[in-house]
Length: 265
Image (cartoon, rainbow, N blue to C red; front, side):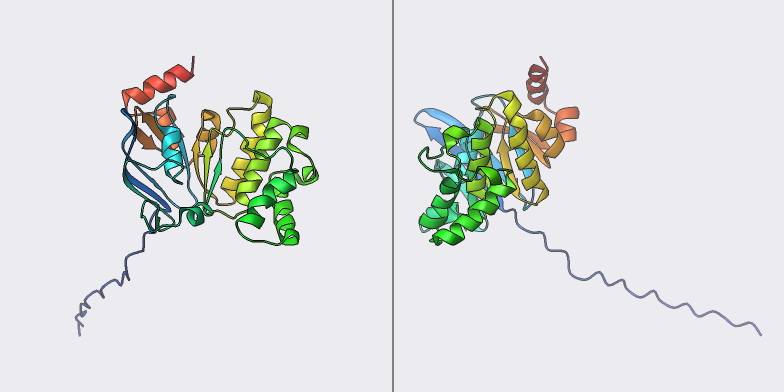
């Protein structure tokens, strides 16, 4: 007796709900910035995911630093929208000082108070802005200074520190507030070449710890090695963006190629 095999209909595959795609922690869209008749940013879009390191490169005057300063409203865009950690920076009801506590920023110049020790510079915002007591602020500051390799310099004054050490104090001051995002505006440009490595090492350790970072810098070697994405700007526009291997190895735009060729000479 031959038994027929009964065909059993395949059960539908249960795929479940679609994965939730997290919104970018920094989302700038349609950003224009005018300084009088000078049109510096011409409709720039920038989205940064949490834990991403985005490197912004381009010639001087391309709008890189202005874009960065718009991202914590040190400069107010002429038009456009900027959302950081779910908060609209340009909403008139936004407490911008409260938002800036979530956005650490490191500048070209160190901006340390010369009459305060390294610890004093780091604790100032902790005490004045966050209302921490001195003992708690000192503990947080010492931990932040240890993270940047300056535990033994807590009682040193800025003039007793090298430029690279002063910049690392400035980074410690920013990370002590536990920001959600760190913005770096040419953090090594004021340093002698032999001092750059220490600052980049600290930035690399922050990146490895998962800090979200947007960096404007000419340190292309660091961008190649550490960035998740590179954004090339020129004349107030984003010309091209992509992973470092693409931007440095096979850029699509001639303007990007021309800029990189200049760097090789």
